[in-house]
Length: 166
Length: 146
Image 1 (tube, one colour):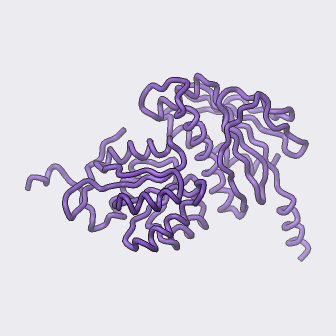
Image 2 (image 1 turned 90 degrees about the vertical axis):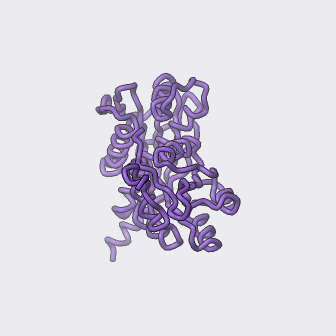
């Protein structure tokens, strides 16, 4: 997986989480995963299509999700509150939106689809060319996992080949 | 959350009235809390572009804070339709997707400004003052009684 595709997502997650949670952040474990994604808790899955295609999952264990949502809401929320799920969705939206902004300004064109709740225990399996990178962000109130599996689309490759051939 | 010097309407000294449009309940609540710190009043909410248009007609807000990516009708199209019908409408786009094409498209179709998520209250506050222009006044308590 190309690092130039991943870095904007790491930067965006770092910025969005640090600003929202008002606490220091560090990147913990970083691993490549070829197997199906194993969900940790409340997970928002966002598909990307266009010059770059694939998916990004933002995943928080239930206790961390409640703490994060409560921090954003400014009040203690119960685990059952729909705002907890909404918070994870909006965080995913902001991270991906910010990363897409950077990539789009660099000339990549693609569409971000609305987040969907990732409910199954196992996620979409990565393929050879979309091996997933799993990044753990350690925040003051728990760990936030981001699973990224992206690749250049066929149309992007064709476009590049055509440009070279001209 | 930090408290700001209230921005009021110049014509009657009343709080600026806001319509908040976002498909995320979380984002709407977050913006509503910021509006409160600006001394503003939330007069309506909508979760998609189509509802935003009817809510605008119903509430006649001073400012619309509009997300871009939404179901049924996206924010840029909704902004355009609102401004076509109400040329004085002040629509501020608030989105996490802030690439140049998007911003230009929004401004060309009637939006007054663009704020990228995650929204920093101090940035939104300055944008509100700018967009209100002479129709808004910062109610400085030091001079309020003069």
